[in-house]
Image (cartoon, rainbow, N blue to C red; front, side):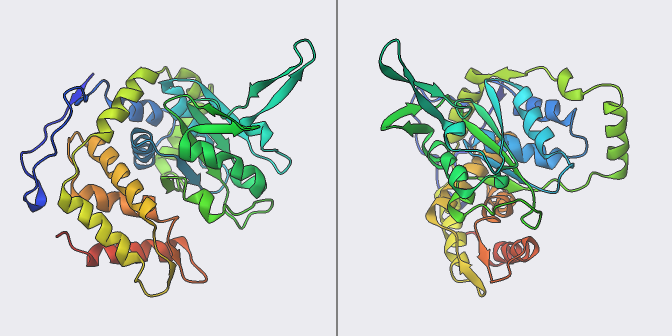
Length: 332
């Protein structure tokens, strides 16, 4: 089912939509809610988390799921991958994992006397990085180039990654044994970070019912393929964001750098990521333009892991600070 967008003639601030190139797609080739529904058939009671995962995918971003073991982090990643007919790989991060185990390695062939590149599991459209913070920082950094530039460089040769390309990483809380906190540069490569939390009572009962005799993941059939995803990404990239919305994002970003108790405000890249995520949220809502509401919805998920709030920063402190920020900064 295709989804058409209606773009208004004017937006907040009196700005008209920028003219589009004639060849630019304006209609989604599929319904992103079909992906949400497919994943929701496995992960009960987590609609908001599933929507955030789909938004990250539509916005060409990467997703970090942080929570305690057993609440469905890997299940969400695997269900999202199963709902899309693309090449998927899964990497179990462990302390002895090496960078070459992720990106690949050049192998010498005695028969030909040359080195051939053997691609690693990062060469997939969806890469599930399971328990990413159990690996050493050196191994974690092997994903930096691929997440930022959709390419891998090995022995001086650069190899492009498949499109679409998305990393869905899970991690356990830092307080647990055997974990290495993700450095700021690594966290910054993830567009969205979220937690799942415990399901509601009835949802947990439904999980027992659905998984008592079989694995619901095995019942998921792909609802769209790589070409559909790429076309949807192109449409979302071209959604209209008015001058007023862009200035609102910059005002929010600059305000984080002046907040009391904040060691490090968000970077310009964080503002770009917020705009892209807001476009993804607008597309999921069926609109061809971004509203300030889209920006406000995505602020805690896009900036929550980027804002260093005080020496003993906690997620709750950051959420409170961002809520106060959104309340204080007004749309021009």
